[in-house]
Image (cartoon, rainbow, N blue to C red; front, top):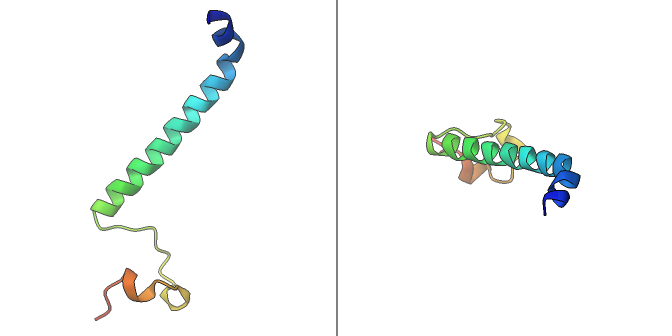
Length: 57
């Protein structure tokens, strides 16, 4: 097992870093969603979700 870890250390390190980045992105999106912020670009005229995304007055 130790030899396998030594041989695959760089691959495992890259996978762990990428997994940490994905988790950080998901946590940020969830926090933004709970605070009422979104990733919307604001071009509602051509958006298929324009009637359900923002509350129209």
